[in-house]
Length: 94
Image (cartoon, rainbow, N blue to C red):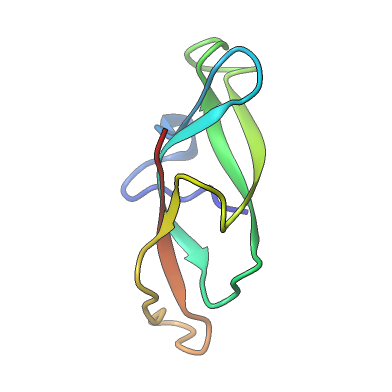
């Protein structure tokens, strides 16, 4: 699950799911996902562009293969608490 955005609470999610029908696009970034698994499928918490600005119905979870077009992972870095579990950030572009 990829929900984290640097310095934001879950109610302040900025990553957006854009579109009204397929193909939808994710736009934004997440600060923490497990890295080192090439075939990883992400479950991304995003704000719906066609939903209310906040509250019920404003957020959704989107299933995205890490190797999808428009998805770019940053370089892996060690976690201070669990260095054996490297993590990275992920950027989503239209």
